[in-house]
Length: 123
Image (cartoon, rainbow, N blue to C red; front, side, top):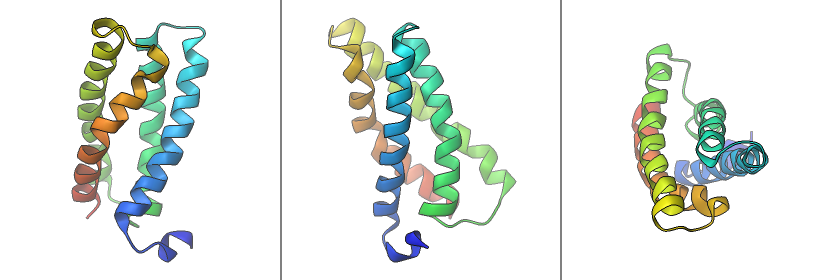
């Protein structure tokens, strides 16, 4: 398995996060054509939670199935969403910067916090 060839959980986390980010960002851009930025962001974010759980469990941490911890993962992402939504709002409505770049600013701030919380959760 590819995950076993990459020794560092941090590197695996960044790879899985990159794939998740790419997928959810593309979804956000498509939705942005039809919906307000905040609805597009929410839908893309929720979609990313399911993908993140699968990638973190199998690829990043190789954790056994644990329903209790699985139930806590949405809390990690809820906190990330709250902070991310504030950043997106500040980016678009306060700073008047392009909404297409707002999720990238959010990701840059929230990734380190999410890694620490996810590592704690899956170990």
